[in-house]
Length: 455
Image (cartoon, rainbow, N blue to C red):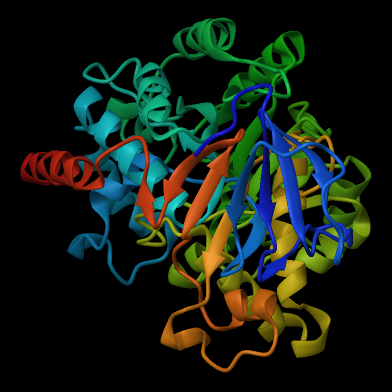
């Protein structure tokens, strides 16, 4: 069942509906085309004429979850023995030689697999940070665009880059670095070819030099200029580890936030991955500039990087969202589980009463939408896009719960029963609508085996 542009669909009488904005949709919501046109309060019926009805009496409805930081290609290198039990820099060093052998077939397979995994977990919009390019894989983003279309979710594909190789004092091997000219010209081309800035957009492009330890200050500056010219967002890793802070001081004579200001990135166009190791003054600076920060709790725990100070950042005025990060530093691409992980880690950091399951859900919806500058997403309200995740509670883990929305997070939901993007069902009865998951997995396994055998 899907809605034609002129038809209305009433998703009726949900077990619970968390809108993210305290509006009452106890008796469901009405969709026309790709847009929510009515919320139906408790005891009420729709005002508009209804063409189709979907019985949601056994489901909890959430706004579609939004993942603000990922590395899709890393689904090919999960649980690699050489990378286990290491912190960030040695972890990267062990994996760069493998990633240097990525090709277009591997990129297509990993993009499909990551987006399929995310979609099944209730994620309707995902941002990917792809920064590994080589002579055998010069056009990875073009490949990702085509792969993303097959799954049916919204994507922000960031044109990452590395220009500071080992020979110049950087961390990555020279074989996966590119010249500033190549990076900037490709960034310009991709923005012109694929970026759709409309509210209906299924694909947007952002610019994303990898990190201070893998690109030059000149590239950071020129990328910021190009982003302003093209009206694109900027993304990078920053403040992830103390090693990164030390690298910035040694290489550039300044700490990461000062460096960000020096290269013209300290503005609301920018969102950062991780944002852990900032002092109080730096947090104030980021907040004043309305910079966004994507919290990646599972990755931060696995690599022992530290804990993002989400409450201080939010109070300072920074925008805070949620991301699963790469599947080699998380080993999963499950957005609803990342919500639970965020709640647990932040409770541990701040105290149980100071960070709730609602705070975690808001981070994964409105918070993430604000990072990606997508105000039409992230909540259930009239005029917002019909991106929804519906979860059932008929598993043993949920038995005996007293609050269906809280149960999703506290009891550990892991798979959505139904998912809708732009008014179209992309998951029905816990199965992908547009693609064969087993076929995707088979091709992905072949690509992973081939990649790891090249080592």
